[in-house]
Length: 163
Image 1: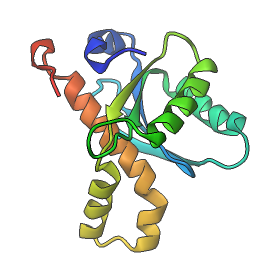
Image 2 (image 1 turned 60 degrees about the vertical axis):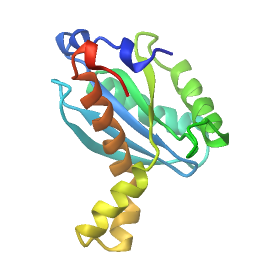
Image 3 (image 1 turned 90 degrees about the vertical axis):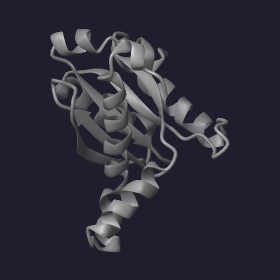
């Protein structure tokens, strides 16, 4: 797996590839994609993780082919002290399984997702969305938040890429 600072955004843009963002949870996976200019993240879907891994992978692989994905940014759920915990192990296991089904030219990069769900939930509360509506779209919103943070980082000049 590459580090985000190693990603060549110009190569992705010139190849007309887009970036996918994933918020991988135990029950659902929020999915977001960027535009072709890799400037703006938009929510795509939420996949329910029921049954087999093949069902989840199939849905994601369909999106990867349909949207010409060249890079997958996945939320990295570090603990508050910045150390990877058990949830990181679960996410990594899922990502490794997903990557084994994909074109090896698609890179996977982690992005610190601490506070992503809380921030999105607060935004939805401020927008007066009901608890039910928030529950339906929170994971997709977190994927957008994760992806937009990474996209903003990728659009910085190389010399200013530090987190």
